[in-house]
Amino acid sequence: MKKLLLGLLAFGLTIQAYSQIVKTEKLSEVIVYATNYKYLNNVNTQEVASIPVTMLERKAAAYNIKNSDIYHDEYDFYEVTFYIPDGKILAAYDKDGKIMRTVEKYKDINLPNTVKKAVYKRFPGWTITKDVYLVRYHDDQGITKKYKLKLVNGDKVLRTKVDAGGNFL
Image (cartoon, rainbow, N blue to C red):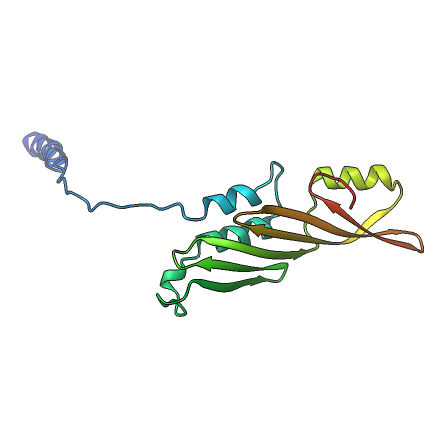
């Protein structure tokens, strides 16, 4: 019985030695292109953006126009619209898949702290009931970000526009 147990123990230890042989395989080369990095760098803010805004902007940046059904080599620009319940993006791509310009609109998002602080400083006692976030991106001209806000204080209603830096327009 002792010999049988020692034999099984030796057999169990030697089987593990055979499992350590690793086959090496050469993988094919992968090329990664950062086509829309300029767009993502421009729309990104220093503050934490609202989740729907970030999600939709990343979706637009990752979209590959060449894999689309509407892609043909003869066209120079393609317009694609992305929708979610909180917002939408109309993006214009060139034939290489680079975003040339976008128009974005989001409703009732989480506002950046700079905008909130500017509104509460200028209008103490007022509450923000509705907001619309508008973004215009152009490859050559840069980006403009604007917030349209509806403020309420009792029976009074006030509408105002603020840029991303907290400056009133």
